[in-house]
Amino acid sequence: MFQWSTVWYYLFNDPNHYFLLAAWTTLWISVVAQSTGVILGLFLALMRMSRFPYLSMPARAYVWFFRGSPLLVQVLLLWDGLPRIIQNPDFLLPSWACVLVAFSLNEGAYMSEIVRAGITSVDVGQLEAAKSLGMRYSLAMRRVVLPQAARVIIPPLGNEFNNMLKTTSIASVIGLLELTGTAEVYGSQNFVIFELLIVATVWYLLLTTGWGYIQSRLENRLDPNRTLKTDLVQKGWAARMLGFGSPRAGDAGTLAGRR
Amino acid sequence: MNVEQQQNGSKEMVRAEKVVKRFGNLTVLNGVDLTVNRGHVVVVIGPSGSGKTTLLRCINHLEKIDGGRIYIEGELVGYREKNGKLVEDREANIARIRSQVGFVFQRFNLFSHMTALENVIEAPIHVLHQPREEVTERALALLAKVGLEEKADVYPHKLSGGQQQRIAIARALAMNPKLMLFDEATSALDPELVGEVLKVMKQLALEGMTMVVVTHEMGFARDVASHVVFMDKAVIVEEGTPEQIFDTPQHERTRNFLGMIS
Image 1 (cartoon, each protein chain N blue to C red):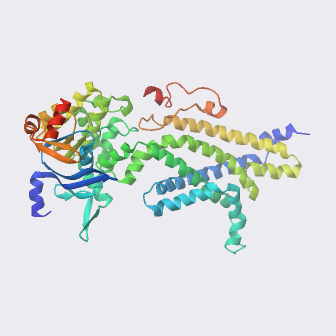
Image 2 (tube, chains in turn yellow, cyan):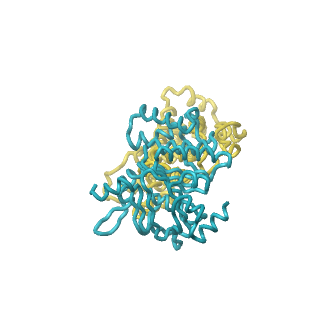
Image 3 (tube, rainbow over the protein chains, first blue to last red):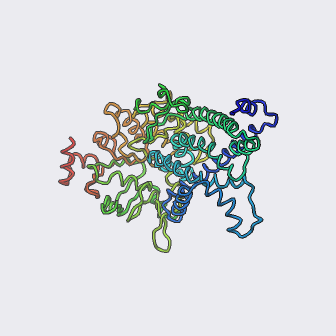
C-alpha cells in the first residue's frame, strides 16, 4: 500500500527535518561544485585558447578525460580507487569531500567549453579596441570581453547548475545523505522507499524551480548587447521551466528584430 | 633618450622603415617607408587591398610585422633588440605605447556593455589610473566637443553609426594621445552621416593633432591633408602635397585610381 500520509509526514511534519537537511546538503554541494567548476572552466578555456601548446594541450587532455568518462566512475575512482592507488588504505576522503572534488573537476571540463563559446562569441573588434587603448590582455578580458561573454555564458550555465542539483544524487552511492541518499536510507529502514522518493522529487522540483526563477532574473539584468555574433532568443523563466509561452516582447532577447 | 632621438622627437612623430607584412603567401606591405611629422595630417589613399589599413594597424602594433622597423617619437614599436636580433616587446611596453596612440576603427568597436560615457572614461581610469571625477569631467567635455553630451548615458546600440564613431573618437581622445590613427572611419556610415564625423576630424586637425588617416574621402584629403600618400599593391606609389597628388599625379596608377573614383 502506498502511504500518502508518509509523504505528507516527511514533507511537513518531520520533527527531525531529515529532508530539509538533505536538501541543504544537495544545495551547498551543488553551489560549491558549480562555483569551483566555473572558475576552473574559465582558466581551462583561457588555456585552451592560448597560442602556446604547453597551455592548450593540457587543457584539451583535461576536457577529453573528464567529458569522456562517467561522473559516477570518477567519484568511485576517488572514493575506492585513491586509497589503493596511493597504497594507503587508511587514506579515506570523507564522502562529501570526494563528491565535491569529483563534481568540481568534472564540471570544470563542461564549463570550459561553455566559457570558450562565450568568449569566441564576442566580436574580435572589442578586444582590438581595448588593446588600442593600452589595455593589456588580462585587463581587456576582465573589463571588456568577459562581461560581454557572460551574456552567452549565463543561459547554459543555468542549465549546468540545474543539472548539478540533480546529479548530486550520484553522491548517494558513496553514502552521502543528500536528497536521494536520505530517501533510500530512511525508506529502506521502514519499507517506504517510494514514498520518500516522492518526497525527494518534490524537493528537487522546489530547488530547480527556485533556480529557474533566479536565472531568469539574472539574464534580464544583463544589457542587450549588439556585438555578439550569436542572436539570443530568451524566454521567460516560466516558459523555460514549463515549456510554454513565447519570448517576451521588448525583452533583451529580441535583438534580431531590432537589428 | 639620446641626442638623435631628441632631435627626431622634435619633428618626427612616426617613422616607418622598409616595413614588410605578409599574410601567409600574400605580401600586404612590401618595404614601405613613411614619415609623419608632428602636427601633420597624413592621408593615405589607394584601392582596396593596397595595404593602407594594414600599414595603419602596424603603427600601433595591432599587426606584427615581418620586416623593417616602425618608430614613434624615436621609440621602436612592438619590438626590442636582443643579441642583435629583433624580438617582440614585452606586453606592458606595447600597451604603454598604444595608450599614447588613438585608433579609430571602421566599425567603431565601442564597448557594447558600456554607455557612451563609460566607454570614454574606461581606459583613463583603468589604464592610466586617473581619478574618476577628473576623468568624467574631461569625458563630458569631450562628448560636448563631438556634439554628443546629451548621449552620455546611452548605450551604443541606441546610437547611429555617426554618433557611435564620434564617441569612439572621444574615447580615443580621452587618453590624451600624441597621435591619432583613423582607419576608414567613415566607410561604414550611411552617406548622410559621413559629414558629422569628418567635421570632428577636421576640427582635430585644425587644433594641431598629428593624424594618419586612411580614407576614401578625397574631399577631406584635399582639404585637410598636409601630405597625401597613394598606395597600391603593397607599396607607396607616390606621395606629396594634396595639390601634387590630385592635380599633377606623376604615376599612371595614381592617375587611374583618381580617374576611377572621381
